[in-house]
Image 1 (tube, rainbow, N blue to C red):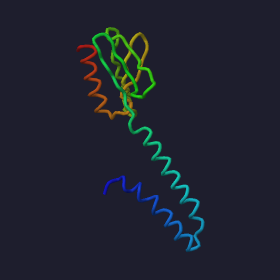
Image 2: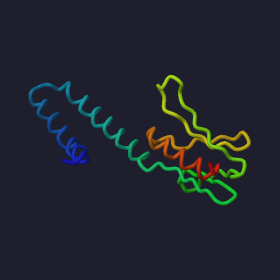
Image 3: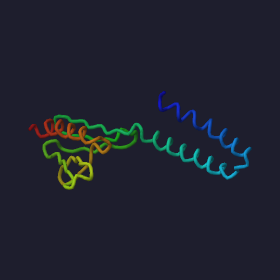
Length: 133
């Protein structure tokens, strides 16, 4: 069974269960059933808003542009000759590493939503492309 069925099934079953509990004179269940539906709906809305989050990194011969993939948002441009990749790691190992592109003291973080192995692979690919190492 796919996980999506749960989100279609649960809002249909929850009012039925609330109605049955009302027949058993457990009326205190009703507000919590409504609250549960509200929390599930808010979680689904938040997830759907952020599900297609992306960063687009375009590397040309002399420039690097980074955009969030949203319409109307201007990309950030860096000079490729003066850009360097900064990959910082937490010394204690508790927090994920962070990946930045730096040019003239201007930093922009990239790969926030990636897991650690994907961020390492992105850092290796970008380092080879940008710095030519």
